[in-house]
Length: 70
Image 1 (cartoon, rainbow, N blue to C red):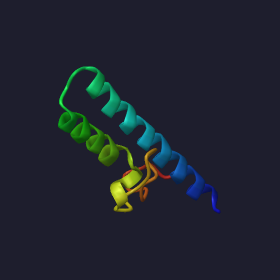
Image 2: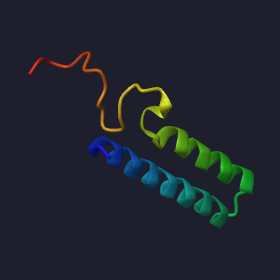
Image 3: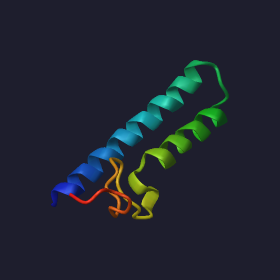
């Protein structure tokens, strides 16, 4: 397993935990379940690195365009 695979898996696990916490928080606040589900889905879409399109990682690991040369 490559190191970046491990980082990707850790990012996915953190995203899933945060989505579950958001869902539970919405239910604890007395919001309808559908609101909690939509909120959790939004967290998943925003939290998964690159959204599955390969446009860079969670921490800005993009193609390097627009950065100053080192």
